[in-house]
Image 1: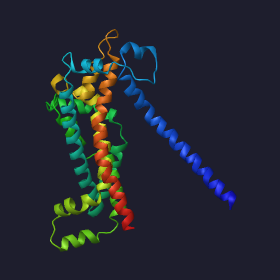
Image 2: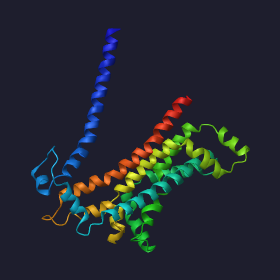
Image 3: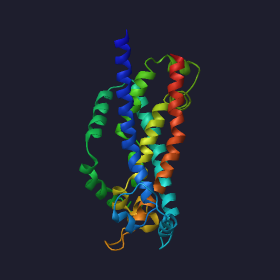
Length: 281
């Protein structure tokens, strides 16, 4: 009995130690980022420091001065990220619901195509995507950054797998149909609340991916008034002699704030969904 208890506490110790290691790996880069945001370029070039500097206001003046429209970048990034997240999650959930509930010919073929699309790297189709947007005259436009992600293959896969586990039977849907509810009402009033944890998780991933996206906007957008926040931060680099490292770090640190706010807002839906499922069990 004593040896079993010792083995149990020994395993718990190593599990906790490994979790602490993961936390350190996740937190240390963010801590160094925040510290460098308070240091000057010369201090950053001298090496790593764990103590904050006194150049936060100077770095902030670098961000807001010299024609650097940080608030415009916030608005542009927020518009793209929120629009892409809402449309992607909603229509991906609708696609997953249709593939899970409706029995029709070709459903397996469509599902196979979705899996194949998910396996294709974005760099393979990027040149063709750019040429298509140029022919449609959608360069310097937010449409290519929002509309193509409406039905993301990975999001459809995740939500469908969640629906398979949470909607194993169609009794709830059949009951709603008997009560006279239409298909859209069933989806919006019944399915979406049930799938809220999956939707919240995918919303977080989609928002973070869209907010941090740099390559696609950099290639498609040349009008500086339409620059996203990551693109504006990139303009601080200048040449090798005028690179404002402190301003860049502060800009990156500031750009993390909306991500943290969005995560804290959406994570409660994940927690409430898990809690509701455990109580139901």
